[in-house]
Length: 103
Image 1 (cartoon, rainbow, N blue to C red):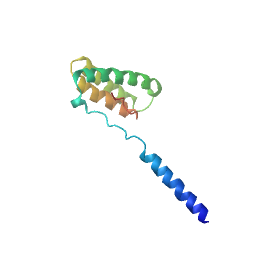
Image 2: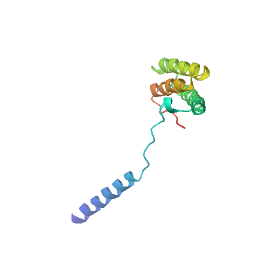
Image 3: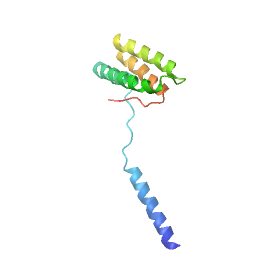
Image 4: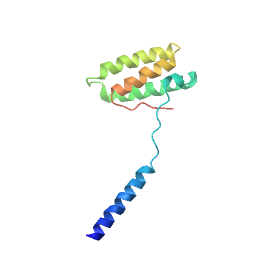
């Protein structure tokens, strides 16, 4: 019994140590803090991610909302306000339960 308890404690300690060694997930840079070049690059990346994802989620209930956000985002990206476009594009992906790409 004592060996089992010692083994369980050792496993719990090792698991805790392994979890603390994992890198923290970086929060995406707020769109308002992106340079114009970074925002334009991110527009392209998020558009590619949207196009890929939509192939698999086109018939789901939230697809129309995601498409509308994507269209709005692309209009802003191409219309000279890429940071605002990034915000809409990120939201379009989140609407589909997908974590948006980051730089």
